[in-house]
Length: 320
Ligand code: ADP
Ligand code: MG
Image 1: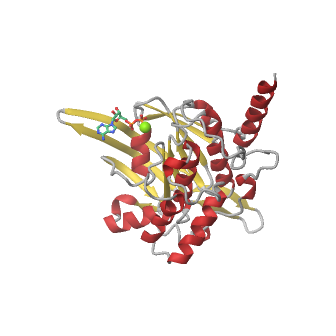
Image 2: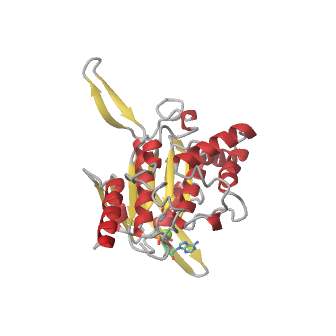
Image 3: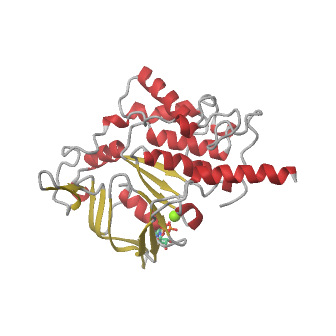
């Protein structure tokens, strides 16, 4: 984590939009109810998983009727390979990765710089096509989708968050997050309503007319998270979302992601920082385009608790 982006004081309401128990402040995470728009995605229905030719796993056995309940991965890749060609040079960025990710998981993709994390995210986010291998997204073989179907599936299912926020600099927070709803064909008053609700959800209800330059780094990243949620995705892909943020702000972002995951959103987060990865429920480590480790965390740390401890310690240190 870097320390070059400390959030500026927020008009005497320093803790207002942060996780934890700030005296007199409100906590956006405690205020969260449901992810707006998400009800539109029926994540459990067979229809959602259209084709079910992917290998399924048994997740429970019902004694009463003696049937096995199965679950289809939301993401499944088999021998996924990406080789970039640069003149005479071949760069093997992803080398025959096989991996499945299920609904409700919170996965951290870890590994050193150049290990293939972003290349992998671009493939599973349908922003790039693999050189070889299969990719099943929500039960559909991605290579068989037309460009239109692919764009439609991506827009419907996936929200993206990047390290550099990627906000429109001349548009307000509200405008930044209502734009994707225009493309999704949502009527104007519904856009406005949903936009305000989601900004409130991420603790920015009082910043809706601010432009990115008038917001701290952490606030900009919250706008970006809000934008990723507006069309009710089933899956959030975040590539180094805390890479430009200081430690405390990073915890705020991780607390928001943990709260969203608790509401059922599947999250895949790329990070090269192990202290960020420990807030995920599963850690997958890449090296040279291979998966070298895949571990479930029995009890992931709570970003909200760690944030509270950090703030308390800072105020104690100040008094000493
Ligand atoms: P990470 O996100 O883990 O840092 P990347 O997926 O960005 O890793 O990169 C993996 C490898 O692929 C690196 O060697 C990188 O230089 C190379 N690479 C990434 N993108 C491209 C590209 N568009 N063209 C050529 N090589 C690339
Ligand atoms: Mg990267």
